[in-house]
Length: 486
Image (cartoon, rainbow, N blue to C red; front, side, top):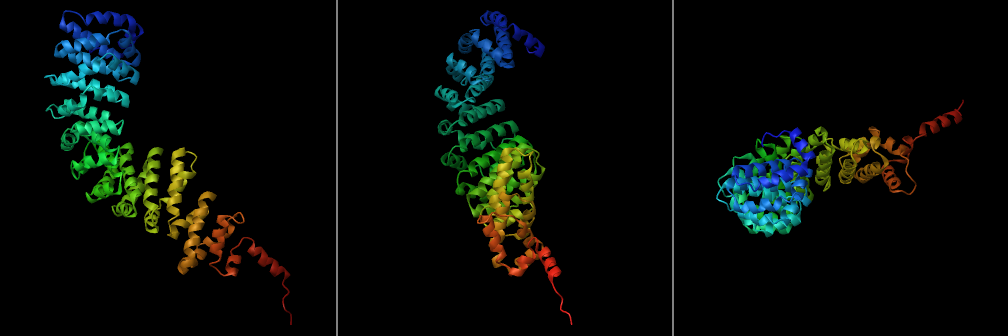
């Protein structure tokens, strides 16, 4: 049956009811190989699309499979578990049909089978049921699967370890309560021990499971940290496998987001510098959790944001903003830069000197940018500008910024110029003062107040000199001037 082509499967699907009724009696055949082949054929059909999986359910085949799963030999058990997995994968409704026919108890018994292949096949089926939603996941937990899955990750077979870790991840992801059941079964310590396993696919699943536990609450994140995953997990950021890198970054992000204390622990372990290096060594979605992790760390406090700056996080983020083609990655980068730059003038300057503000402005102004990217870029510009006192970075905005951004730029000049004579002189010679006189502001508006504050920094005749129309006024005076004659 392994040789079925797509065309053959499609042909079968057109006569699915007839095929199901033909295969069903074969499941009861006295010859074991015929039973197994029939089960495998059903599995292949159900795996192909949801219509065929639906036909398996409607053909009343599941009860027979579940009954045989408990009674038959290991080859049949594997084939039967494959059918259940193939049906369950398509939708929550089909997975619920598996639960309703009483399969969970039998699948959980198979997790204790002496044959690792039977355990693996049962774990696959349970994982496909649990991944859909919290109700199905809870049903898997209630059937007693979790302690047995924790035993499976301690078995020597790599394939069994992988699927058991994947199941624990799928169960944990839905809610803090489900994650807690995985923790209560002692999973964290065993998962943490496998972070350095040489098998990349196993590492992916282990890191994913720890992430799904840590993401829900401070308590759960602290329990993951207490399993001494630092600094061990940082070696995964240098892994050859891109998804190991991504899942390691995700785990660190899920821990960092909760509290300043957890972020500080990551900084102390060298985690920020390691994540920045990782972002530099990959592209696209693999970068995304690392970018967000830097934003979460920086958001907590001035000191943590400064740790990101000192580790050279801003230049790396500016590279991501410029070279990533996907809007959702640019949006996450803009958000992270906002978290770094929004604390103090020193933080804002660290972002502004990388010449990132004009890039953010062009992303905000571009009609091709997604709405989310425009919103994130605008927020980033605003939060960085409101702290930025580094005037060379602000000046281009006098010429390019739309009115809603221009207001914040002029506001910053109105704060800095009264206290800095050097800056006042430079503002005149660079053309800034002239530009400010050309801005049309509503009388009584905040923008007008800012302009008045700037003008009050200069002698009246200087302000008049740079005001629009002043040269015409001078020419009129020339016209009306009567020279003195002897």
